[in-house]
Image 1 (tube, rainbow, N blue to C red):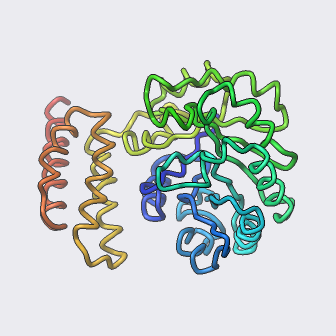
Image 2: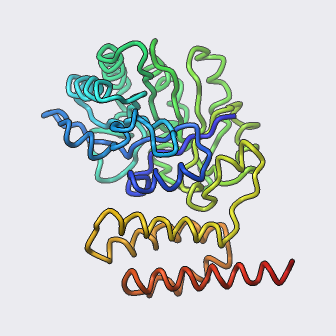
Length: 323
């Protein structure tokens, strides 16, 4: 079993990749999608969005980081991929899965255009050295999951190592009832030369095992579950106990400390990131859900840290009493 940390827009930026990979036990992570316009991509932008390139393409703890590109111009995408490989990217991923309303003729919008996706994949593969992995992320369709085989035909080209599938369509967005891992099972036989990676609502060991049964996949991709259970990779692969609430809050504290060390002057940016982390962590814990409601009212980094420390002490004290 392998577990990847998903390329979460607005969540898994370099600081959070550093925090989550250090404790999560992931086999690889991804950058947030990097937009590639008709003008191409600059080295400065690439190094800003993927500072791991200056560390051999790995996070501080050694987790490989794949550069994810999003765009519809095949030449510009190929040039951006070639630049990423020259700068040390171990792998390049093409995003055909993002459903953001701010992404227009890119991301999951291209699921309606299999021939364009095919041409982008072929152009990027040709631009990359043979040893650099090329992977693709898609959804199970644009409007309907019956579109998945045709989409796979377009992207599962020779030289593509993996295709990660978010098991909802573009039209489904993130509706829980629309999730269908079973659509992946026939793909293993139909596309034997490509590793199929299952993505969507993998938030615990139990959901990972259910996904494996329904999808037939032994490589999974976790997104928001990584904030709910920060050591999720270890939980799924190694049978580790999920972090306690106090341990999860320690990761929130480390996030605050990391942003402080980066010299960010606007305290609201730092406190908002802590609240963002907690907004997902609370989904796995009634205690953190109650704490989150109070935490949302904190003003400033100092108060933020005091509230976190006070709650950690409370939680650790109650644990010692039970023991």
